[in-house]
Every structure is written in structure tokens, then in C-alpha cells.
Image (cartoon, rainbow, N blue to C red; front, side, top):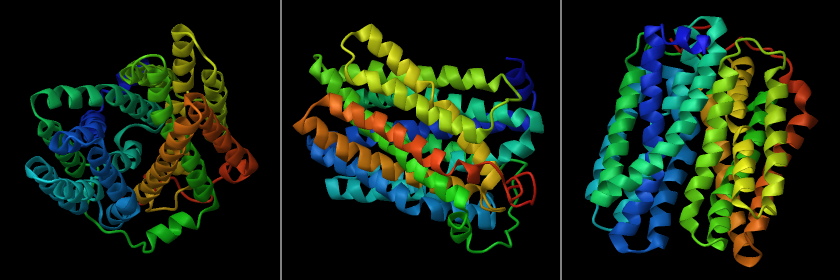
Length: 399
């Protein structure tokens, strides 16, 4: 724990942590809040899915562009504009009177959502000493899992008072997190001299490999989103999926916290990334036939232990391989790839569950992890070396 104590001694680190918590919690609340808002408006889960889908698709389509704007112009101006649009979208959702209006404002909210997490990642290298960056990444991953547990609980509690309240809270948190990032000392408004950011990201063989791996990670997560509630429903109540997702998050948080206490590792990030995909595939495979709740808990916690290390290794690989001045855009491409995989995973798992059963949806989640491992192992050599400077440790765009 000494590494975390030293991390908290940095004032800039504390501000980044506050921004990360606010932003991650806002993003964790928003999806369920939009579902509950859509359902509360018309009583239809079809409408609820359409509103939530509009939020997700809006974010996927504009993700790389939002990242490029920050890499090109610095944090302050783009984040301020995105925060204002997010506030407008949240207000629109809170006052909309029909499903089509909800869909429109939901798409705007997703399209304008400030890339808080992607913006923070390259700032850690300037906020703390180099030997603490790994611990900062680990803490960031742990916070992700904690907010994944708390966010839906907040959204559900808010909906007890009003379906609109959850969206308002999420919007306030996103704007707050954006302000904390956009007005920190490490940022500047000096524009980058690099153009064609997206082309630079996609031109890197290592980043193309990471994009493919992130699609596979999304397939795994998307299948779990459907497979776990389906398994819970087979046992009596779909609502019991809540504790299943909590087990995954707990396993991830514990693994991330443990990794963060070690400043120097013997294994490379590429090896760790491959190991995480392999581990999640192996841990999920027995879940397809698990019949007892205690055994399922063990498997879910074990599978969850792969996700935070996967995120930490991804951050480190992006540091090593993202072309200079593309740190935020590169991360947003990864987010878009994962969202694409999640969409495909949920649709595929839904069809498998409907026609065969939950076990096949869970098997497809394990297959997603296995495919990710296969993608990495076939081209692992291109992740083993870097021809570019570490983003955020050379150049001054992220400052």
C-alpha cells in the first residue's frame, strides 16, 4: 500500500483522482439511468433500449473525433465545449416529453460525452514520478470497478424518486469531472502541430492489434451483460444478476489494487495483456456448467481478476505505441472498438439465449476472451518493442 500512500502525496494526483471518480461515476450511472428514464416515459422496454442505444451509438461514432480534438487543441477548449453540450443534453433528457425527444437527446449526450478517462491517462506521467505511473494506472482501474458497482445502485435509488433524477445526477458528475480535468495545472491550450491524428493511430500495427483485441474484449463483456441475467433468470430471478456483476467487479478491483502495490514487474505489458485474456477465457469456461451459487461466485471473482490487469496493461501499451500527440485519440479508438464488440456481443448472446439457453451465451463470453488471446499471440512481436516516444513523457501537447 506504500505506493498508493506516496501517490496521494501529489496534489495533482489527488485532483486527477477526484476527476476520475466523478467522471467514472457519471458514466456508470448514465446507461441504467437512460434505460429507467425511457421505460418510465412510455412503459416500454423497447423504448428504454432505444434511448440507451442512442447514448451508446452516439458515443461510439464520435469517440475518435473527440479524442483528436483534445490531442490537437489541448484539454481546455474542447472539454469546455463538450461539457456545455453534455449539460444541454442532460437538461433535454430531464425535460423531454416523448420517446423521440429522449432518443435525440440521448444520442447528443453520448456524442458529446467528455472523454474524461482518456484525457486523464496521459496526464499521470506528468502528475507523479515515473515509478508511480504504474500504481496510478492500477488505482484508475480499481476506481473503474468501484464505480461500476456504485453507479447502477445510484441510478436505481434516484429512479425511486424520479426517473429523470438519475440523468441529472450523471450529467452533473460528468460536467464536474470535466472541469476538474480541463482546468488542472498539467494542461495547456497550445495546439499540437500534428495533423491527421486518426490516420496516425490506425497506421500503427501495434494499435491495430490492440483495436482487434479490444473488440474481442467487448464481445466478452457484451455476452456477459446478457448471459449473466439469463442464467439468473433460469435460477429464479433476473435481478439476481446484480450480485453476479458485483462479484466480477470485486475480483477486478482486488486484482487491480494488488498490481498497483508493485512498482516494477518482471512480465512485460504485452505478456500481461495476453495473460489477462487467457485467464478470463479459462475462468469463464466452467461457468457454462456451474450449478451451485458458491462455485459461480468463485468463478466470477476469478474471471473479474483479469479485467483490471487488462486495463492497466492496455494503458502501458498505449504509452509505448501510440504515435506522439495521439494519446487521447488512441484511447478513444480503443473505447470505440470495445463498444463495437459489446454491441455485437449483446446481440449475439441475446439470440443464443433465446434459442438455446444461457449456457451458450456464457460460452460465447469465454470465446471472446479466447479470441482476444489468439489475436495477441499471433502478433505479439509487434507489441514487444516501441518505435515511438512515450505519450505524455515527451512532447508537450498533453500538458
